[in-house]
View 1 (cartoon, rainbow, N blue to C red):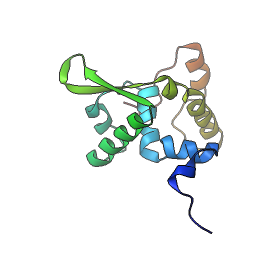
View 2: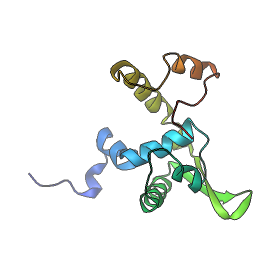
View 3: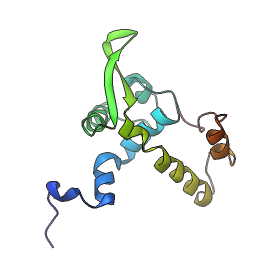
Length: 132
């Protein structure tokens, strides 16, 4: 069977999502923005997973090119940049919440407290353990 060309990765929702944000590093970057306080390159470098700087730069560029993140000048230092979720990126929140819920059910070593989702939805949850 022939490999699917890059142009044909649209149409199927799983291929589209996988191409847009489906690798582990992109998902962890989005986690750190969505549920943590990360927004600067250095914030992501400090993540406990230890992403290599070349991989980080590549994934940030990929997420910007896919309009999931917006790259703007840092208001504190215009020589640097900050990364923020776009509307497209914010629309991933229910997906990430569902992943947390699924992991809470099936990962017997989860670090996420049982009441995290309820507290998050009520606006009183701290970031999950391990987040920046």
